[in-house]
Image (cartoon, rainbow, N blue to C red; front, side, top):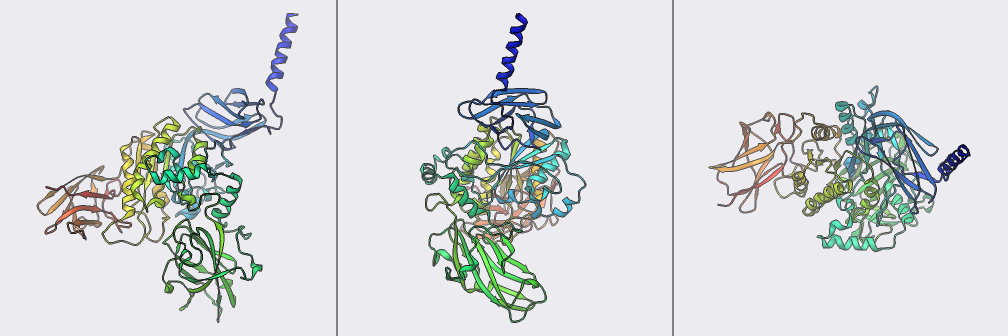
Length: 637
């Protein structure tokens, strides 16, 4: 009898344990962060979460552990497993779904805007990377782009990818070189979770409460937070507005103008100029431009199309074929056109996406032309124009997608806070250069809030903006002010800055040298997180003093000393005089000090590399790291 009761008891337990475990796994939906090739964070409790039907059961098996849980009434489940063992590959089972090629190592978050998102295929050295016979244990998860006016706890998709010759091209270049170097130095599998978004302001990565001291932003936050929000309609409009066309896609996006309308629905506009000033006031989003180009003689060699500067982003088509695309305003566009693409009558079409303020062609009329051999055909003047998709779908009037508080924090950061991680790399600021005065406080708040959400003071490593635009004369610089605001967070623990002031490109807001940036970030991580003896800090201003007709400048973090190819003529120093004028000054390097000549000048401020683009620099420490740009106010007697 006792034996019979004992057997019945265990049969009941077995039946109870199987309750709700769907044989096909359809009722249990783990977060998309769990997939084949995933990296699991070492040294921390392993959390697995997802959604399911209340009352159903989810069962997880991993590294000899098996745990089971009933889905609560909320429909959201969370199971905690012991700290996993380093290494791999491992397998994991969630109900009937098996995941493979799993490694336990370190996860680094990669955030920011386009220079973090910039893929390996578009950066310098891509072909060289493809020649490698093998790739390190680097895996990559691209967080889906989504926005919301309310906090959400679920990602809309995404899978982990093992980096190989097929997947390398689309990975963030900065994070690839960063992760690859850390793996080579530590032999620890590295996972990158990339949540960057091109063009994004820092305000979108902050929660609503971060704007309590900013009345203007608080008003925007209230308007956005309180509106009726149709997520499905918003996502559709966002895709139409933002994603654009893949280079190889000939299918065209939804707002591609119909060829059948024969231009009947198009208006006319004079190029150059901004459409807000004439035909489409207060319109931010997609606008299509088009014009005919007749060729008296068909070219036999490649021609160059010059469009000048365009505000903001653009895709250009010649006879319906994509010939080029550029992201960023104030960048001059020049594209090659194959002679085989020409016919006697041609159609040039330009799709322009404006994020805010003026949109359209920003250069002079003579800068917009087609050049074939030695002949120029000016193509400014009268163009056709037509509206495309709205830049502000499902949002209050006058708020740009990139200019709305908390929109990315709510939907792209909140779902990641449960994910254990090691640290974060960050490359952002270009979109905030127009208003650097609030960036320091926002940047401090962002780091503080993220650390609170993850429950630890993880390493936060960031890139100081590169030099950009034409080499500028001494004077005020918003880019320099933004760089200083970035550097201000170095007063927080476990932060580090990779200065890029020496590797930018005057005519490209996306410099091709992403490898140097990734390696500088990696060296900071190796020193801070992995206890490697690496001198990763850039030389910075330590002190300055006025003696007779010189300002004597001393630096910290010089490693084995400062160096310059021309120590008697150090470029990029200038001063501000009492009368408000700016003037270049001569500076020389002696015994790791810089001596700035100011004889006969009434100087109030000293600057180094303090401009949008200071040009060629020649002051480095022995580790090959450039001196950080600085501004120094002369003390008043």
